Image (cartoon, rainbow, N blue to C red; front, side, top):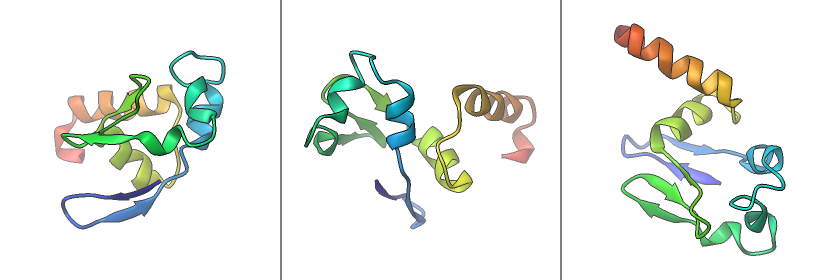
Amino acid sequence: MHLKFQDGAEFVLDLLPLLESWRGNPIIEPLLADGEFQKAKLDYGTIVFPTGFDICPDVLRLWCEQGRVLSKSQTDEFFQDTLKHPEVA
């Protein structure tokens, strides 16, 4: 997915590892079918898919800056640390 943020930063992020890791989930599985992933919409910076699955812009930016989709625990850890130490963010 090609992503461009309001500050002008642009990234290409492969979301397939995320979708593959949730294979079998009824909200994710349809997105693996031909053409379904491309039906994503932008809603106030959040990527929203027709199945109800969404990804918030803060998470997308983190993953883009890391160059890959992080695991849920890695993502949660980053945001927990940011809340504890906002000067780091």
